[in-house]
Amino acid sequence: MEQISTFGASRTTVRDLQLFRDEADPAVATILADCAVVRVARGERISNHGQARVYIVLSGLLEIAPEADAGDEGSTRRVLPGESAGEQAVLDDAAEQAAMTALEDSELLVIEAAMVWTLIERSNVLARNLLRLLSFRIRAANALLRRRQKVGEFYRQLSLNDGLTGLYNRAWLNEMLPKLVARAAHDGRPLSLVMIDLDHFKRFNDTHGHIAGDGALAAAAGVLRNALRPSDFAVRYGGEEMMALLPDTPQDLAVMVAERLCKRLRGAVVFSDMRLALPHVTGSFGVACLAPGSDGDALMAAADAALYRAKEQGRNRVCC
Ligand SMILES: Nc1nc2c(ncn2[C@@H]2O[C@H](COP(=O)(O)OP(=O)(O)OP(=O)(O)O)[C@@H](O)[C@H]2O)c(=O)[nH]1
Image (cartoon, rainbow, N blue to C red; front, side):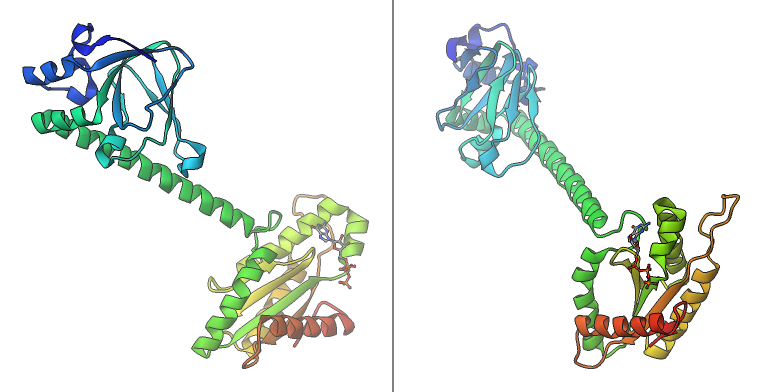
């Protein structure tokens, strides 16, 4: 980066500079006239040697990339002729963290921090343009942040759902079961759990193939989704193991819900568009209700024991 002239000797006028748009005061041009104009070669990194400065591109193109170790994950910005960089560092007197590189052979007007303040005191137009610019950048940064939060939330949701059935998955269960248990205990409200295991599912897979098996799982998940209240939760927590978590539901009511699920599963059509209809799948259901003072593991163990009894007693039924 070498000084080639001053702004007074360059062909660019004050009105060509975005920061000075609408500036009519000739005194501002006089102040700027002594500021250095430097040349930077394509690919050259612009070093400010720890000094806060405003750079205005007179010709060429700059790229500003946030430094990796600055904790700033903002996106890369390009600075075109007439546009500026480095204002914020001058205003808050902080060393510029962003890395500036010339994408083309460029000429830059350099305004040292002290001179920027002199100009701000002289020119209301500059002060207004600076405020506008910073407000625009804050809005853009906020919009970027909101977009990132949305994307983050999207992926979080994705990581808590099972891809095949769309039900919540085991990660969701691990996170939410303790919370549901704590809330039930705190409110003194019942919390019931229905554990569901499809019957002879290995045989179903072996006979009709894995893809038909996947269809049966999706059909069973559909039964759960359609039969439960919006306040209930349906989870696929293992291969062909699902569960329904029923807040505010005592055991006798949970048994009725499980009976309804068992009946609907029996009647669910796995593949409606196949000429040779596949046999319906059935499931075994174990129901348990949170005992006073116990935890999620104990609730799961009780429902699992009830499910085992349902299998023992011939499957396609509900036990508690
Ligand atoms: N198609 C399909 N099958 C799965 C999936 N996850 C687990 N399975 C199958 O589910 C079957 C479970 O078999 P088992 O645990 O032996 O139980 P079962 O045959 O249902 O017998 P019971 O539970 O005693 O009635 C296995 O064959 C697994 O391969 C899946 O995502 N898709």
